[in-house]
Amino acid sequence: MKKIFLLISVVSIAMSCSSDLTDMNVDPKRPTGTKPEYLFTNAEKKLVDQMVNTNVNNNVFRLFAQQWAETTYPNESQYDLTARKIPDNHFLFLYRDVLADFYDARVMIEGQAAVTASDIAIKQNKLAVIDVLEAYTYSILVDTFGNVPYTQAIDIVKYPLPVYDDAKAIYKDLITRLAADATILKTNSADPNFGGSDIIYAGTAASNAKWAKFANSLIIRLAVNISDVDAAYAATQVQAALASGPLASNADNTKLAYLTTSGNQNPLYPDLVTSNRNDFIPADTFVAAMDAVAPGGDPRMAKYFVNSTTPAPVLPPGRTFIGGTYGEANVFSTYSHITATLNNPVFPGTIFDYSELQFLLAEAAEKNLIPGGSAVAKTYYDAGITASMADWGVAPAAIATYLAQPKVNYLSPLSGATYKEKIGMQAWFALYNRGFEAWTSYRRLDFPVLKSPTSAVNKGILTVPVRYTYPGVEQSINGTNYTKAASDIGGDLMSTKLFWDKF
Image (cartoon, rainbow, N blue to C red):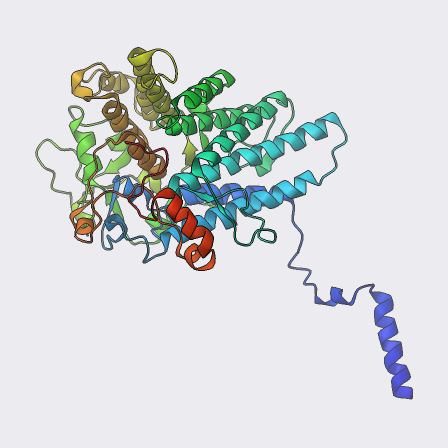
């Protein structure tokens, strides 16, 4: 009896000290709560990391655009996507690490009380910025795979096996969302959004204008992409976004400034420097084209590439740099190398820039999405080249000389037979180090003319891939919806064109 009484006393004392016995299982050093700002920052960084890294497990877009080649292991430039589960990783990072955190941040912010007019405006701004980045992320998923989970995505409790939405329908909904976001951010221009938690535009009241410009620029990108399947709709959207105000200069570029501290460096730094692997070199597909466009080559080449002196590469006559053979194993020391600029841990990661916008508008002018035809297209084309060169530090005099070259001058017959060739080639040059956008520009314009390398052809891959195949995990876990999606887009193949890729 004494033992029973003693036991009851001990339990009573314990319960009186704590209202919940489960508190004993809580590790105070591992907090279970978080703030929406933390989730937002994490998602923002993970998104840019995925788009700018060059880890072949995650991102092979520079290879698909044939701007870079590989050395020891050329599998990815031979279009082997499955050995490293590259589509799985890309899909997973964007849904799990990016969209899921944006979703949770949104839910938390929506649940916060906002009393004053300023509080309400700040809350609206935060939700609009999240929405812009969500729209960007979904656009990347569509432009990678085609039909993807959208209306049932992220909420795994309600939709553990989400359906795949029609890619064109997703595009149009994204454009509607982006236009609404731009309006909100411009209306609430006197109030900040995420403050220091925004590591792209700094989150101040002044940053709202830049977020709105990014939203409008993204609308223009999506509208130009869709223009070959719905020209009237595309024209309306491009003109509305122009009126609302897209990026106005390089100062508005959408980019994340990295830090020197480990874990916060540009992902290129561990990929190219600290790994000590020397896995990548410029592809001669790209280097030779830049070398041929003007005497002495394109002035950006000295910003993009570097020649080793120990040993120095053997340059063909008239060449300033030489790249490796695309799709084959290459000896690193034999070729020109990637500039040390990209080896800087704080080199910014860019997901949209003014140069890209100008080339999109040049294309829009040629497609009559905006008035002016070739004369207006030339103005935008020249502005695209100028913005790219200025961003890479090319001197104004060198830019003017380059624009006057017969193979560059938009009105010269030597610059290309069609507007697609003229714009496509210069956009390819300007989108160096932005592999995904370079690959998208190639798919839309069909320039430059890229060929599947011999090693890929020998494996039965006859053309440059125009999409990723769906993740293997989706085939096994979400099989019914995967099967329907594959059928709806015309087959789950790397050669299956996206809905907007009509030519």
